[in-house]
Length: 394
Ligand SMILES: Cc1ncc(COP(=O)(O)O)c(C=O)c1O
Image 1 (cartoon, protein in one colour):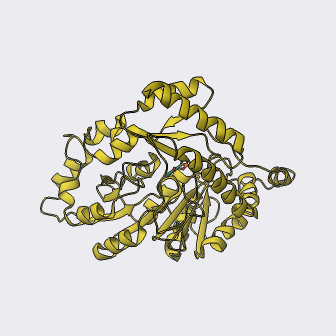
Image 2 (cartoon, protein in one colour):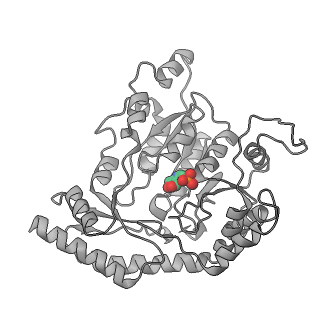
Image 3 (cartoon, helix red, strand yellow):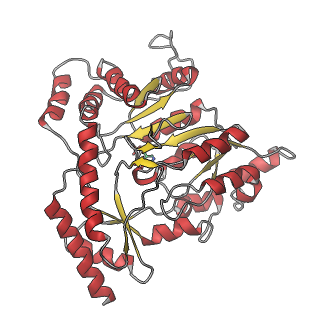
């Protein structure tokens, strides 16, 4: 499906670390963090060992706890909701824009105003019913929102921030898929109170595993640095722990690889743009195939995956099976979060709760995508898609 884009210089950066005795908490972690401050203009960057850990630290730093309501999207990778569940917050899903797959800001505004209407409504033992019992008479207000920059395209952050400001809630921008994207000329991840990036090998840059949080909030940054390091606050010794913390530290090999990859960010993004352009030119000519939609406010798309959608009359799963058997790896993308078994069990969501999300989930297919793909490989994938559609639809 994807392949990291690594050079000899990237590999050497890792080897250089292994040739020293300092494999954790050395000079590469702050250097990696600085590259994010330089890119985004954020005051603080905190590097951790995954995007999920980064999201979790934002949740903790924002003071989100048991029973707090957080608005988010069901059309995402599960981690954006899981980070809320780690603290027993209540995710309140709203549906998405059918063109981009990003959270629909009008529904966000409606949910902020009429939150009761959007609460998970089933599950006798759910957090909600417990929360209801202990909060009789309390006005329900969301504590935060987690918009996700889906597939490398920023959500409509101006509209979302306006609602957040009106209702006074924190914005945690999940930019795990959107490093380097810009919204009206501003860097993705920089548009809320906290921004989060992730570096699994299919991402725009990779550290193997890793994540970064950016924020301008001094107190939250101190808190997150403490929490990633077993709760050691500034001034604590190695065996003193002011907070309940975690080991979310990034190791030095990963950070060094990250520094090297960040120095090539422009090249990495441009190569992905080229592959996306090759795909668009070929796929937009195939009847029944929709290529990704890029909003006018997306001044730069940071291509993370390439997800096409099929017309309703095309059997997506049949095409996927046939492509796989021809050696073209593909995946349905995303499977909606609210229909994941543990979510259904805990909150009682069911089919038709979020029809746009479900529709995109049923019609979307991620096709092979990375910056190291050649035009011949793109041709091969597109020809296979064209032929399989023709042979199934006629
Ligand atoms: C939208 C989104 N959020 C969070 C994550 C979690 O990042 P990680 O896999 O590094 O924990 C990902 C990564 O795939 C993601 O796509």
